[in-house]
Every structure is written in structure tokens, then in C-alpha cells.
Length: 72
Image 1 (cartoon, rainbow, N blue to C red):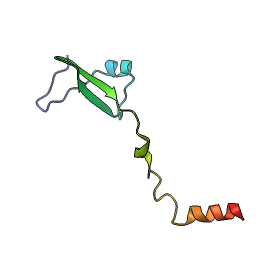
Image 2 (spheres, rainbow, N blue to C red; image 1 turned 60 degrees about the vertical axis):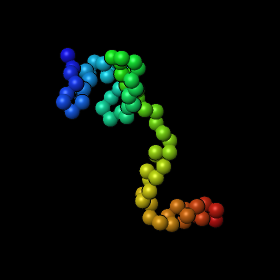
Image 3 (cartoon, one colour; image 1 turned 135 degrees about the vertical axis):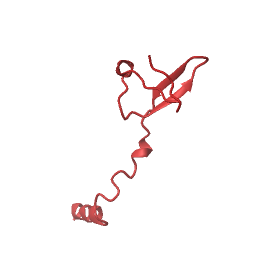
Image 4 (cartoon, one colour; image 1 turned 90 degrees about the vertical axis):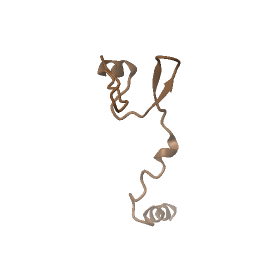
């Protein structure tokens, strides 16, 4: 039986996570839903968080050079 630790942490049983479709690395939110009940939900992906993920992938000016070649 899981218990709340002195650091206020709880280990969730693998079976419950699998039934809920949750995996290691998923971002979740918690919501108190009355006495004796906490709801854990996967946080929906936020598209704006992906912006900038490719920054620095190409050297400065590389994409502009490719575009100018397409127009030629």
C-alpha cells in the first residue's frame, strides 16, 4: 500500500499508471476533488512550448540561401 512520505511524495503503482495510459516523463497536473480524492491528469501539449526547439540547428543565413536558390 503506497504511503505519503515525509517529503509529501507518493509512489504510484505501475498498474494504475498503465491503466490510465500514463508513462514516465509525462507532464501531469493535480486537482483536489473533495476530501480524500486527488485527480491526476496528463497535461495537454502546448504548441508554443515547441517554438525554438530547432534554434541553432542551421548556421545563420543558411535557410535564406536555400530560399534564394529556389527562386532562381
